[in-house]
Image (cartoon, rainbow, N blue to C red):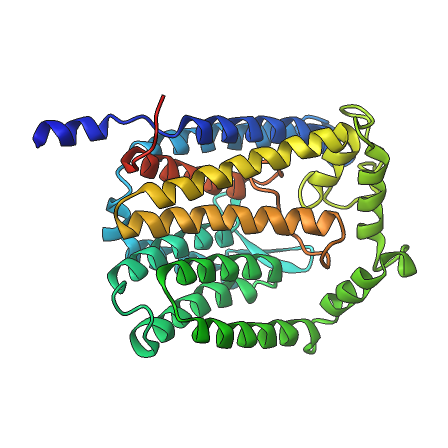
Length: 375
């Protein structure tokens, strides 16, 4: 038996998942460099500014991925509560003097010159803690008192903290992720319907309440972005111009026109538009296929791992990537109202890239313990 356990520890990780992530990160570095060049020259007089930082964060993310890939994921269950509490404390620090306001939103913390977004840490910590909760309550998940009510409290704390940072896109992403985990765990359909109605009401309030007029303008612009293409519909229209002008093969790497200050955050929230413009439909399709492969392998790992904690943890990680990718692509194609959501592994962003690669490191470790077919 001891020999069998020793053999299990030496199982290889899911190589298809690992390779797909590496290709996505490589594409992201190239596209961040291309999309950020004009702004980097204007602000820093150095076209390589964002490239250098993205490569640095990619290197750090790769190191974290390798480390977490070799740490037994079951340890996280023991420390799920401290991890969650630490993330909540970091989120609250935003409202302290350490918090940094940028572009009208207070979402960053700066400590000793290092700036990061606690929301990315909250997403990962919430998935770990919620997975532990679901696995501990698996026999009573379908009950109202022991299942639904505590789950709603956890979801409310996690998402509420991000919502008060004026980040509705990330709030919806995390809420959708945790609801997917709850559904997989076995919540009642009647509870799901009630929660769906409640979530719709909260979303309506978040859009129409006083002080959130800009969100309502985004919804109005989404209905017909060309009706006010010089103001509220500007981002959506410029994004559509970028994707449409790319055609089948694209204008060529580095030859985007819309990145020259037509699309705000072209290397971040709208990087998929630049991919479509420079690499065309085929380049955009490649990125989507890679993301689909990542999602597919994550689903397989969740199905094949034996313990419930590993199943819920894998489900949460892959649901987060799937929902965030879907929202980003839907935004840049004007399929939903504009909101600031990065494309996982591709968009510029240090905290986002490192935390996403950390999550993949955990998922790769889960794959070591899953009954997968290995080459």
